[in-house]
Length: 95
Length: 491
Image (cartoon, rainbow over all chains, first blue to last red):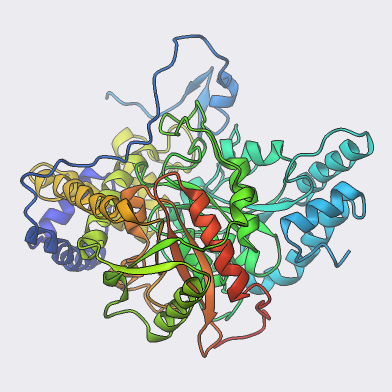
């Protein structure tokens, strides 16, 4: 299933990425060769096969709901590009 | 203190515990070695001289004061820059994390410290562990110590090169599709991807969460076992880490190969396999036979579907995981953008390199409306078939042996413009990540150009003991360890 430049532009928008026209052209070409390779999966009939989302390691993700220490607010903000009064600071969201 | 540098973990540990050498002397010797060879190898993103020496001083004080020493006391270890280290920049090979300083240690790093290991530096890698040559690092190109004009493999290229160049006896890497085993093969050292769930992923920067696993690289199989012993085991901070006891891996090493049933899958010896790689792996298999193992040709019929399946699943998970890099909570933020939407786009477009963008795009596509069933769901179903191939084979086998990579180390630039050719260099390793199995590459010979060849030993889930046992038996006969790169050659 071949993919067109227009579709690559749409995917870029979904992925929050911006590309030059030249990059879009190159991506389209590379996408098509990768997708052509991926298309060999079509040869397999998988209608009766259950999907594997991950290989179960037998873990028990649930624990008792008890309060445990966590990182401080100061530490949580330590890597923020911008913060103010204990909050992450971002540009205005609603105009 | 020349005796310490180039020594194995056991040798260093015994020098420190007997007092023949101080941890500080050993640390200094390794840092000096690193300073000497780094201009040529460039394995490290950063050397942590000050904190390493202060950790070493603590070990020496503990010894003087008679406190018990950990199993890695005074052993210099390098850590891939994808693992969080408290107070030490962790860039993941990416510009988007250029200034990121974690406020906590990854569990495996914390366990190394508790065991007395001295963290000497963070190693270079393909950006976000996406690549097979370390050429995708945003910072520098790491060179293969065996041939400086060739890649060390990837994505844990720095961790493999640092060990091969004698800068450290062992290191940590991460492996999503072969990123420990392939560079180990290219650099002529052992390297293991443990079973999914064996080692905590807490503090490992996520690439593809259902495939990622942390593991050790070392000068010898025993070094790999000693590091695995420390980092393995359940961690309540990783909900996928397995609540299983950790066996005594050193005890598994001396058990030999007699009576072991080894499968040799015919699909891994087909066209595309470099003849010199095949010769070296076949000679390794002959040694296994000589040691009393029984070889059996087997079939893993869905092998040819592994790469397309892997690139659907890995990119889908990556596109989701990497959505977090938005310039809000940490990492790079684009300057002078005054609206949220454009801030995300500019930040990500400036911060990610081209391979990361390609994979995020591919992952976004396979998850997008209208394509989910055709690609992502299809990939997950084929993943089931690949997993079942192995389950069936292991009903009557102890281990499976294959080449680690279809070729030895390639030259810089050789595959960088052809993503598909680069992806195909992982053809023998991605199957284990899809099936969650443990695997280790050990060196089994050199090509005419003096490039190392690796053979991959695959075990049942959570049977790292068998992988180490067979690896140690073969290593003892192959005697590759005596060969070290000269660090002045090209090919």
